[in-house]
Amino acid sequence: QVQLVESGGGLVQPGGSLRLSCAASGSIFSINTMAWSRQAPGKQRELVAAITSAGSTNYADSVKGRFTISRDNAKETVYLQMNSLKSEDTAVYYCNAAISRTSREAARALTFAFWGQGTQVTVSS
Image (cartoon, rainbow, N blue to C red; front, side, top):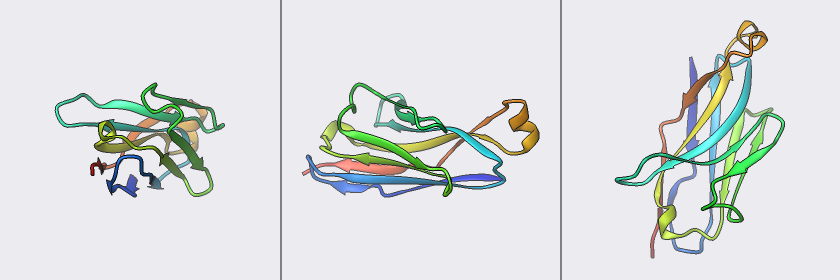
């Protein structure tokens, strides 16, 4: 079993900051790309930021310069530092990771996508 558990969401005023964390646990051999997505009410889920195991990152245009994704491979954890938050950042934020559960899967470059349960971020005065 593999679990991803997010934390760090909450209510923040416009212009404020929050740091989300997502820890992976369970039967994990290696983790490839880790990412954060979000889904606002009535909208489709969208990719916010992603980071490879080597540390390469990419961001949605809407968050570039405000959000920073990082990871601690030893802790199997991905972070999302969110600064200069806007009301339009309000959403449920989900982390996901591409995981090889065994050495055999890794040798075949076989990964499976696992998702966390989501954490609510509300930006409001």
